[in-house]
Amino acid sequence: ADASALCFSVIETAKRNGLDPFGYLLFLLQELPKLGESPTEEQLIPLLPWAESLPEYCKLK
Image (cartoon, rainbow, N blue to C red; front, side, top):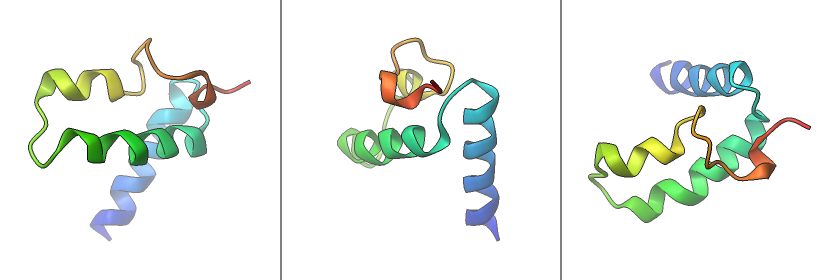
């Protein structure tokens, strides 16, 4: 149940920020493993759904 709630939250937050949920999840699944087991806040900020640096494929067309 906790995992489902987390996924739902990420998807809804992506939608509210004008992102394609599938593209955003794909981006997160590609980038998060690169950060290791204890990423810093500074490393996570560019991955947030309101970050201006997100790739185009994350954004709704």
